[in-house]
Length: 206
Length: 206
DNA sequence: TTTCGAATCGCATGTTCATGCGATGTCAAA
DNA sequence: TTTGACATCGCATGAACATGCGATTCGAAA
Image (cartoon, rainbow over all chains, first blue to last red; front, side, top):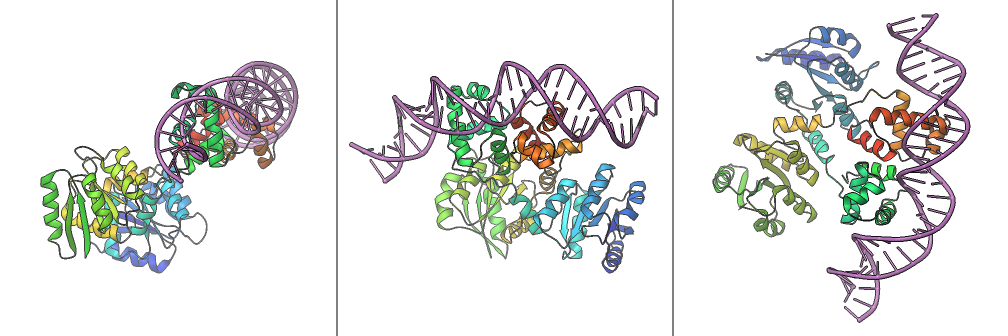
């Protein structure tokens, strides 16, 4: 028996979902709220197993801020975001904040139910295209304008090494390190170590 | 009708899978190989829709290197990794290389089939705990030992700004920037901009 | 066979940075 | 009401870095 809570500002959707979910044999759903403010104390006191959380709440705390709040307070339940949006930003912000899943609102009931089960069993249910976005975000750009040796040098920089220590690590002179870094800067269009390191992380060269 | 190819070094598993998948109404599976080397030319010439790729191949090119190869050659099919392993490294390396999904070998046939469908329809099928690992990897550590102002300064550093430009951006003197950075270094236990930036990215403070 | 990128090394100069030691004012918590 | 964290500012010095202009060698591609 999975105890499901819902925060959703649209009354129709909310009540509809509550009825449908509560009607299922293995689910119960008797905690529903129209915003985070009215839910938070209650949900912390009497935690459900899984929370379905709308992102776009009418006013006050947004769904994403809500996730952060629950995580800060060390809430015990899993949070699945429920949203019409599928912009990168909302998705990644939700997951960074601590949601374990993300469903778009067009998800049919059976999928919602299996997502809730999955979240409760330690999974990370996501709508198909959301999952693809998430996986895509890992793909490294493998910036191949850098030579192999330059990539090695950049990697050392990303580990915080000074010219001297890079030289030691790669068994070359500091002057050679200097030359490689010069070329790296030209190719990456930067002109400081910090910028090079930042670019390396942003472009997933590491 | 989804055309499935398999690279798997264990003869029993391979032949078993081929038979099971090919037997399904909406699937065909007549491309199976025991390693990447013997598959690559054929799969590039006559691409399937989806490739199930074992990670731990007996010898030669590993499954992960295989993904990189196919991606380099701009192969047209989706790749689902198929592995007994669920170490972070193998999973993330696979996705970084360009796989769109990751199944553990204990996955029952119906799940394998729906994963293949999902991959073919633009999804990113993953075993439950793999998906959770992937989602967890987004969670920001929100290192709160830094003060708000220090976080702002660090953010500017991550954008590659010099002390002077940070000072301009935050409307404070260079000396104040220096002080903040001093404190950031102490708290993050680093002693250079590059290290601080690297740590900021690694710890997802940005 | 010549050209070109990659990798190696050297030197010199000016800039930026790291770090030591100060200081003041505010605001909240103890 | 005193402590302590935060934010602000200042100065001085040595170390690290950025960048300019060289150079040689090697191997692959043209």
